[in-house]
Image (cartoon, rainbow, N blue to C red):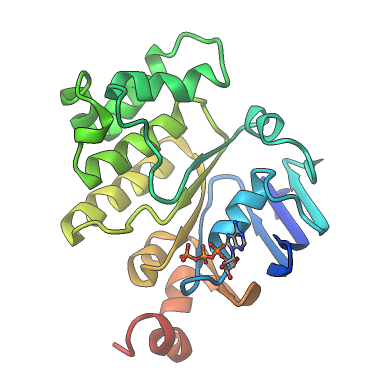
Length: 239
Ligand code: ATP
């Protein structure tokens, strides 16, 4: 197996008395889409945030392309090629779509942002149509497209997506997931996706992990996980 792009090795993390992650280990290979599913409060967002440096792990090790990034500040981790589209999108509502996109580039690279913006438009033509519109006036689906487009502006090696389907209509979820699939297939971008929408997310993924109360309980190819009765019962309403 080629060396992992991301390796999380027995990481524990939390907030004060709350232990949100308990010895979590997972790896993401270059070019993979890996999905982490889990119920509300399982620790999914905490894992993505810990990979980004906040909160810091209490124990364990995180490495990126073989380099130890455990305990590094967020900006240093971003500079190494990690970008996140956070839960709830967190776009800047009073800025235009264009300004939102440029925020993703300015923080990290002095390169000409044009080609990255074109990549975002190719993925989500709607963003180009809405270029001069304020972020806060976009629909939920458009805001999600903007959040992903903004994350791409820093030319990441690893894209972290926190519940991109949250609150969106099924047709819009399909558009977003199709775009992630295309992005991965066409550019080879590596993706770690956190979702409660287990069905679609595991179909999209090469591999998946299940997080329960801060611990990884299962892992395997996305479709193999989908076929397991305990996954169907717990995350797919038994269907
Ligand atoms: P959701 O899908 O609801 O976002 P999640 O799987 O992403 O859930 P986390 O948000 O990572 O779960 O939360 C894991 C645990 O950590 C929960 O018990 C939560 O209450 C707790 N937690 C999360 N953020 C904080 C915080 N800032 N301070 C204290 N506890 C927190």
